[in-house]
Length: 289
Length: 306
Image (tube, rainbow over all chains, first blue to last red; front, side, top):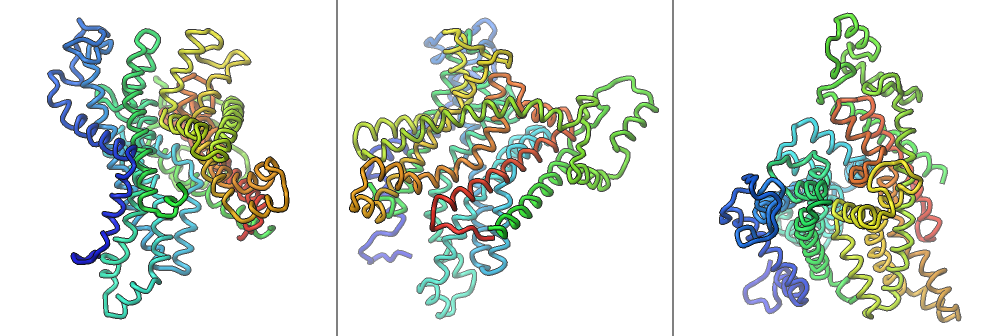
């Protein structure tokens, strides 16, 4: 959409600039990038395997060999936390991706169709909002034996409702604007309008809402794992580690605290970034500051 | 109004029917049934049991029977707790969940609303920053971390309360505190946002101009409108709180509905699984309706439409 010799920056670039103007947002972003890299490659560089037990080192304090100590089975805590972080982040991102995909397609269809089809589709969303989804997810987990891919598909399949509403609202507002009419008048086909005019304009709200969905999804994964229904030990996610920590907190409180701190810091950064993105993409909320 | 209530009622029936169907279909995939866990069962007993629970019929008939059970309020027996109706089990679990939920919700409102209102009234001051920081930290602390920490502090270190179980009359305190702190963070954030938006509106200026005192402007004029987003959040949240937050019931080992549901889902106790899901759906429908009516009462600009 932006033109090389156009003086104003593209909307994406302007939003990026507004986002990075606040130091807190930049910190949150760099923290998340660093964490993602650390969780992504950290376990590979660790001299230990996350599931490797060493019963001679039962719940030791931090040392030069084990920077965050070991758990009661002698597994290296840091390796396990980083590995768990990788699993939690993967679930968070993939589930949000699934939710965004379903939400965008559904919302686009509803907004573009308009009229009766639109109100029927939105009525379905209204009805789905009243569903006890956590019960369905628990049942799904019991059925399919707690497979990794199922966790994020199941979570994604229940988190798309608000995304669909957001996209539908945007499409309804956009599709009758002059530039779309102009494109249609100059002979642009349906898919051209969808790809070149509508999708780029819903990207902002979708990014904002997706960034606010990721922490919710990570909490849901952690909740399922905490209940023993999500990721199964000896594989680890932060939910699994917090569960193990909660079970032995009386004797080894740090087993709960270390993964808890990692998880909370990540949620904090994600929330800050989400709020920052909302301000960056929505000039109205900017003006209130 | 009548039309609105009627259409919502019909919508609620649809929700409950669909929830029964989905839970029924899902639970058919869990290996289970009335006699799964018993060994050395003779063929005749097995047949008799299947006959009693209607397990020998094709699934579509069983789905029809299940819906008929709920339509006539003649609820079936649990597979696992022999001879007990699912309604009996809900009646034993729900008071536990509800006691913790109501207390948690009260704590959340008592902390959250004042915190958010103070932040909104004094923008960009220390109070604002402090309460916003507290709310953000609350949102970022998952209940499965906060719960054990609270249990450790008040239960193990100070020994004020039991760490787990449902024996003493004070056993609701710690779980309610956990839920209350987490939800108060959300409520404070919502209150702050909507209060600030409301205070900037014209009718607030009018109220000030006609000489209303500051406290009446805030508590009578602004609070009415500012509570709408909070109410909107509370509808689904309240239903979730009342039927048992699965996490908190697990941490504090409360015999609430959430624990019954997890046990039923893993044991293959299909009847109880369906019953609790349906109960939950009915509560959500009820609370959403309540929120809609309250919103219309609070905001003259909202009309109830079918």
